[in-house]
Image 1: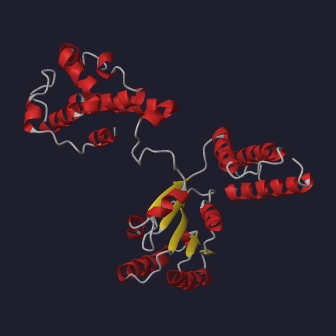
Image 2: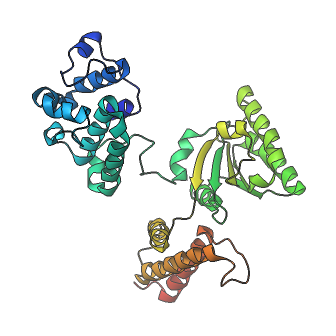
Image 3: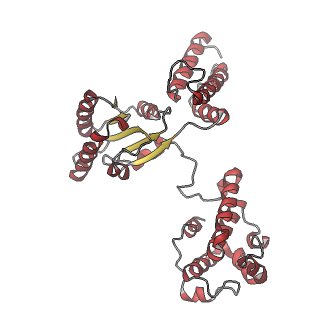
Length: 343
């Protein structure tokens, strides 16, 4: 239930004085008002009826939990609930009655939530825990406007800017990509920004961490255009940067931020790379999928191996998904040409 998330975060507790006064005997009268209000609000939720009924019927067991004589609530308290919902309910009760157990309850809840994927469809996840659009730049685009840049932060060696170029190409949007780091690039970015604001195209500035001084002027320019309403409705600004403390705070606060980093380990890297590529693979010939998987495996091995630079490498090169995409595209094009239309 979506209201339970608010309760877990300590907001949305609106119990009446009468509801607080009718709490079960297992709730200590000396408990702080905020905790009693939270519990009364939770018990008043119809979906929490099994928990409230257990507090009335198993008062002694609940008192043992409050007094730390029992590690957890009785099983009957959340009987019949999905495992993830049960864990969330127990975390809320721990927050109200036994704060010292709250961290452990949340830990058990998150373990159940992310290890038991079969339960996610039955539990309404809030946006901050939803993994459906994690790293999905396209899903964030509706939240942007001409005065809200998209800031892509990444660790050294992982460049997410190519994702924006792919989206712009798929949507047939005009995109001007500029690699920052020189005086010429700053001048080019200023001209491109002014043109895009008028025409409604997109601007992608890469490596903006190399020019923190320019970002102050950039933020003022974008903010002024937003206040005056002088920028085109379709104008979008995307900034790609390494994670650094040099970025202006006002720019960070006014941006929609996504953070990217290479997945740890070959297995995670392979899974993410291949799952992303599989959605765009042609169905024929069948060898495309097999060779793309081999390319994804090679890419995962290389990316993992770069962690040990300079051992085994003569030069430093930041391998990214852009390299894999070019490899996969070459493989698909070569196979389709060799197949000659045959399946």
